[in-house]
Length: 113
Length: 111
Image (tube, rainbow over all chains, first blue to last red; front, side, top):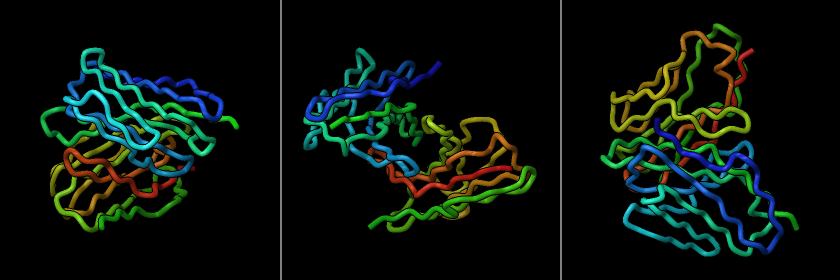
């Protein structure tokens, strides 16, 4: 069956450290993969997109990697701050332009001062 | 610029009553449109998506239906709500190969 899996356990780190979140998928052939941030009671907000032919993407303190062999994406936040505390969701769109956007269950990050 | 409107923000409905949630998008044409549901502390479950007027794909058999009567309008409906329909409903739009933009969400409580 098709699955998108993120670590369901909350990730607690100290301010200033690098947070690394994992997204694994099975039985999908994604055209591209996205990462979103969601705060309580709000809709997700887009952060980064990486295509199947890209290995790495960066935006300020954020970095995403995409390994289609391992079927995994890693999301890094460097020099983390308490304001980075939120739930982070990965999402993928399958190849073939079906328009179907599927989300993982999200990982909650808590950055302690 | 593009905007997405979803209403109402909160809704309390009795079991067995009908439901209609509306979502409209401005500033873009022929968007992909989505309805998601999120249970407390859980991820986003894709309910319906649409790539064009009248084209609806249903992901999960359930007590809900969706319609797209106009290019930028997406409606989520139910004829008779169940307790299990309670949740946080999110509408979103995207164009292929770009990010998705979400509405503010509707917190539905069925009592």
